[in-house]
Image (cartoon, rainbow over all chains, first blue to last red; front, side, top):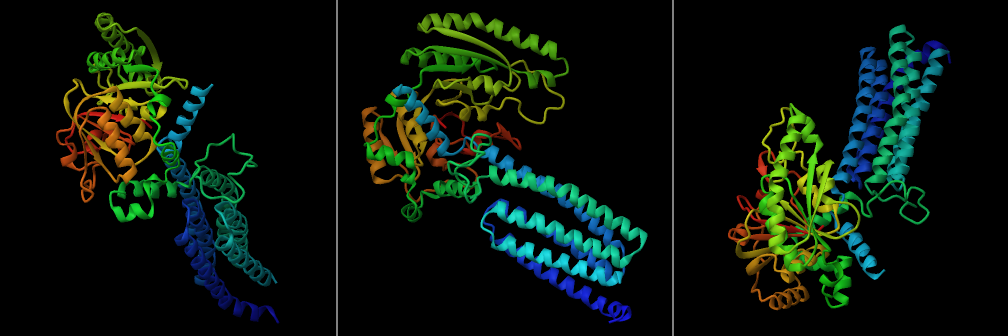
Length: 118
Length: 423
């Protein structure tokens, strides 16, 4: 196999790679929908951006436009901020919920009972 | 040759990406899934980028690809660390965590239930008025209440009665609150503590903080003789506590002493001195947070006690039993009627009737068909003329004003009165 023929089929193979990544997108989307916890969904979103970066790089090859690499860079930038924001959201949600639930009241009451006993 | 290598690298990269997504689907808990997604995912994306750079083999695409790669490598560890921490803190179900061998047990606090479950549970409590749901998931499945059922609803008063009375001695409502708190203390023969909590966040936010501080101290100073004579009249011992800093924390006090806390319904945002803060974006007082910051009951009191019906939002929880008991036994209000809203099972119903009879208060149970409106905790006919409500929880979010809506509007629109909560 000479270099010429590889060049010829690499166009096609790039398209195949993009299709494979679309498959990976579908699998990740499945996890995104299934959850079950918020954390699972956020991990899936994180994965989606990784896939999007790879897809952008491959698109840059199949279309021959190197602008898509800039898109990949921007996506990588945004993905970091997004993940950090999601994590902060989750932690804040916990903080807000804290003290609200019966378990908390129970702990306090248990403590009170213990004190009473001692 | 370079093209061949590029192709190979791209294929390996996409292979890693596929493996990562399969891992994401098949692993059992968020942390394991993250392990697949971040490690194999980064490697895959990185390899695809390298392959693209090799195929393109031009300077600008190599630059751009290289920068993306560098950025990915720099940020992914940070991002996944944050996400993993959040996953742990959110109480998501993690294999092998939550047992005794959890090394983080004493380091990071973690709820026993995932936060999604907590939200579901709240919904259930809200919907418990609909009987069919209540039969599926009985509200009395609450572990605490089950204990109480076994022991025949032991009077909780003996176990958890407050040991001190504490009230907010700042703000416009302070003199009237003092009277209510002192009367309660006199009746129950508990010591009384007046808390002058100055919120330094508010003072610093005003234009002239020294002047504001002086005004606040003056105001408290002028009023103190009245407090002395009040306590002498009622024969209550008063201890005065002055604290600067986080006012909410000072109000709640420290330690595990169960205190009956009396707070104004509208907070002490400007400490009664009326100095506006130029850039304040939130109420500085943290009023509603205080209820969950101390182990005792909290009464958000309006100025003057009135006689009238008292409404209970009953959800079968330990908290609402405690609060109800306190209200009935100590006769916090001259209750002409006790109204119970929410799903009440037969045993609880008999128990409430018994306790109300002991306290000589007629009791009315809400029609099971009756539901609370969308944006309120209680239906209007239950609270329209009520002087007080007993709640298992304060309405969310914990802001005194939320987009201009006063927090009591979330209990029932335009209703004002006492709120007793024990969380």
